Length: 440
Image (tube, rainbow, N blue to C red; front, side, top):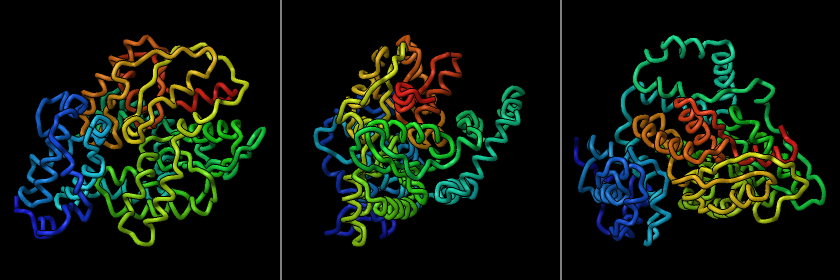
């Protein structure tokens, strides 16, 4: 492997950077090791370079030009979930999420892989996520694959196992695409019910809009029942979270700018998000666009307006009346809610207000399930190990359903429970809230 170029090596007197992104935060690490016990990959593998502390050392060495991006270095960095559990326990406040995103962007710049991998990344990051019409067409094709019985046939006959590489693992994680009427765009305006509190916007998302549109409609209904006018700008698109986490930095910047443009025109008091990875990413727009003179201040203002759904609703008691739900559930903390946004109590406060609902504790509730954006597609072996661990804990609770707040977690945990034949359901938090208000 060639040595680092002048572009990646450290020039005396300049800040540490990778792919033009600051990694000065590596110097905040005091190597205390408190993060080790909280890192899923270190817990599974026990190797120093698969811990936050080890990866920080690698990132610092890359930025200083002391090492190159060898196969081993790429493997250790790519195995990071970006779950940010290390940030929660770090006494030095190391911005680990930003560091690993910079490292992954550098990997994509210098080690983009072969033609097939580049084509896959372009199809997903460039074509589908960036173009709602293309994503809608792909969803329609997937709906046909499922509704026509093709998926059932290839699974029952074992044909799916003949797919090359990691494609069998990808096929197992395909979301069930609802019929066309349920994939229709969310109404641009949902009026408040009862005494009006104000006006908010909701992010309808990219994959969320075509695979989990029911969650978006439930979100609008619950917000309206609690006194909020809800707007859903039809021109909105992907927020760029998956691109940023996958090292596609340039497109992530473009998507962030477009998102800011759209929601600024909505003239709302808050932008409410029901997907944890999107919310954490949008709250970081200020840092993401800090070097852009045209957007830096706008990005900071926008980021300050972003609220996770649970965080937003928990500021006031839920308006009644609420229907009783005699159900035992447990709660799984999505990484980018609990670690990325530092929200732990708000979802539980909302669940505690639902009459008849019994909530039991989930061991390692804030431990990553292995979904982590597209991690379960790019690192299926480690994702499967973490999923098995999560499923064991879920089953041990005796709950009838596990509640969470991120579509990736929902798909991942559903797959894990299905593999062991468990009847436990996986529900989005907003589904339960909507049911309490008489929703579907």
